[in-house]
Amino acid sequence: KFQTAITCVGNHDTILFTTTQYISISKMFLVLKAQTEEANKIQISPVCSSIHTESIFPSEKPRLIYSGQSCHIDICRVLLHAGSIEFDESQEAVSCYAFQDEAPFGELPLLIHGNVKLAQAGAINRYCARLGGLYPENPMEASRVDMIHDRCLDILSKLFLTKNAFDGERQNAVWTFLRDSFLPSEFGYLEKILAESDDNYFGGDELNAADVVFYAVYRVYEQTGIGASEILDNFARLKVSIDGTRNLGKVKDFVWGESHFPYKPCVAALDESKIKRSLFSGYSL
Image (cartoon, rainbow, N blue to C red; front, side, top):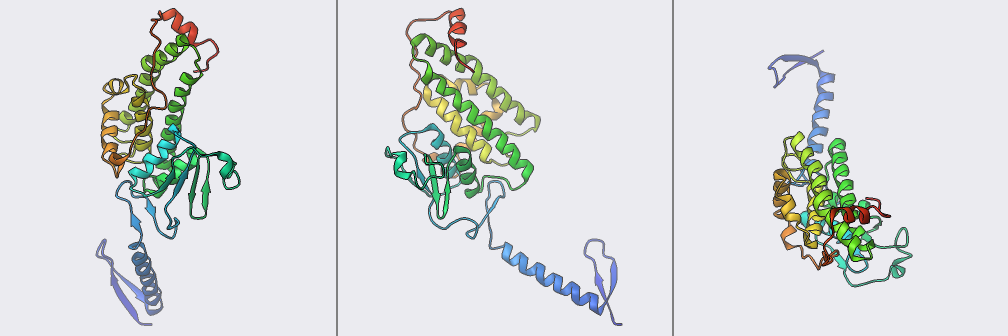
């Protein structure tokens, strides 16, 4: 049989192949060439090398529907801005009953994108992150994003304690706890995660959805007026993440409304014993 010599580029060795083998290899290279040409058509996000194509996501603008102002909806809106994704939204107060048949669980918020209909804040956030190329394809990196995302939602949920404190004394106790104990502790955990990997971004060298979600939750706290920026000053790596996210995509164009949780402390001062007694009387923190 005829033999064909092929020089391997890596080690410059010469390998002899039969004609049949050569034809098979040639076909393989043609397939690889076609796959490479197809891959070149795929849009690669410069943020974290996530892949998203027109064939994966619907071509229509995503639409967000929610009732009035919601701090949870701010997260996915910031994610869409960070990914430079244009979207439509219904900001006016709408009744969930108007979308009861459309929404998967008969309630808002609701994201509609082509034939995709999503409820639940976490699912909507992750979809928006993937749509904007902010969600890693690597499953280990994606799990890290999920971890930060879920913790940030936990941090956000603590603000609702201020709504449940119906008297001034308890409200003071909750705000004092958030400012002096809770936020510094949570920021410390997140700073430690960055320090252990020697990164300034949760995405490593690049920003990803975890940075954006933390930014959104931080901004909600900053808007309350309890001094979140002063707390952040003690965490150098988190500050870098926040500053980087501000300049990501169209985040600067995001318009924040009035605070969902304005800090209005009771005038009467509380001593430490009253704060603790008020705080832990019927509250799970």
